[in-house]
Length: 185
Image 1 (spheres, rainbow, N blue to C red):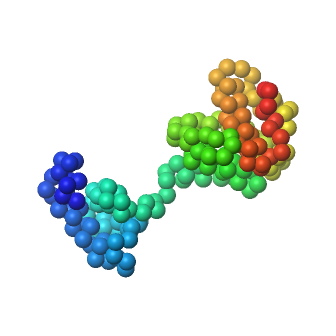
Image 2 (cartoon, rainbow, N blue to C red):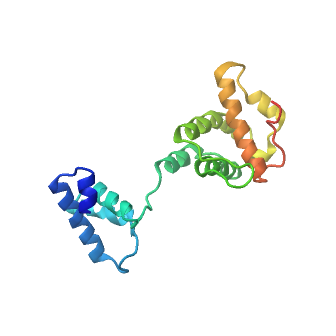
Image 3 (tube, helix red, strand yellow):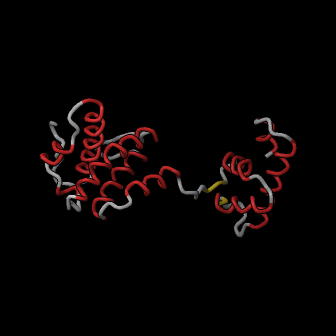
């Protein structure tokens, strides 16, 4: 803790507060040496100890089990709220591949949060329209549905087209849908 504090230029007060927090957490541990969950560290704020320095030290020591929900996951859950369940789980599969990448074909690297957000934002209005039209699953979507959903021209057409192509390419590879209706559009 001291080495980490010195390396990062912490004040003596910040360093001592972090050390006190770590002592409290270690004293409350059932299994000495086990990783400490971030949700347990958050309790330190109730006794006036800053949580962030403690998290940094535990992470640098390899003793942090970060069980906090990721902000991107919470954002996505709010976005797909209201979609019918088969469609929501299909879109969730796509989101997980964008977020985590894939080592199976088609392989892909995890996308940046910005890319994930614009792809999801571009596809969601179309998905909501399809759900309102009575489609419960993306398996029901045809090539004509894709052509109808695409904006007339320009950047909006490109953004929606890229998002839908990404969505259906992932779902086809995962065998969630039988055909990719965006092929050759």
